[in-house]
Amino acid sequence: ETGVTQSPTHLIKTRGQQVTLRCSSQSGHNTVSWYQQALGQGPQFIFQYYREEENGRGNFPPRFSGLQFPNYSSELNVNALELDDSALYLCASSWGTAYGYTFGSGTRLTVV
Amino acid sequence: SQELEQSPQSLIVQEGKNLTINCTSSKTLYGLYWYKQKYGEGLIFLMMLQKGGEEKSHEKITAKLDEKKQQSSLHITASQPSHAGIYLCGADSNFGNEKLTFGTGTRLTIIP
Image (cartoon, rainbow over all chains, first blue to last red; front, top):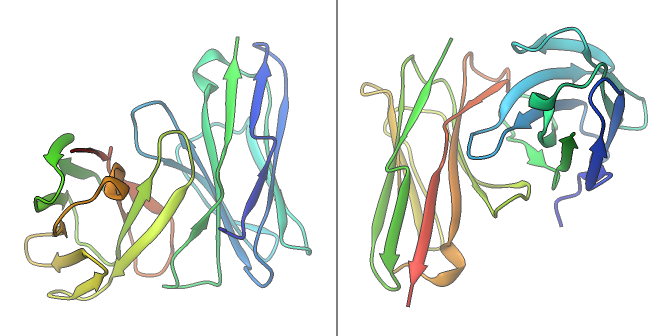
């Protein structure tokens, strides 16, 4: 059991729509990161939150946004969905520096 | 930006045989993580290496970090069907920031 729960597991959206993906981290994990994994590729870093503040961002446009809440849950929001946004979205949380991440099982997003 | 190259991209090994997967970085490695992923699922943490020359083992899996070569290797001894999956290496661009760059993965198939 990973201790990091993501919902929903699968989602189909239409191009141009907006989507919210959710992640529930392990208690005490004050750092959460989101990754996008396209088919056959390694995960790509989207952004990281530390104590509810954004703490770094990868090469993703502003239509990708996030929130982290005091109860160790977080959200990834994507506006104006594009076909290329179809991917597995992974949430990962940790205690902090050098402890390694615990990953959730991911949300498979399909944009049609 | 840091890039990680994994080799081989795919590997088919007979059960019981040994195998090695390599991960080479384009920049200095501050922290190197190995994860395993079943198709379409989340990442399972295997090991984290931080110091040059460091070597860690867990069950039949051994990972080493060669800081000078900016390279890490993952070695599996006496492979089993349970070892099948995708192996991903991930690296910190700066120590402890945990914004990981991942390789594209090595797909391991174990045949009877």
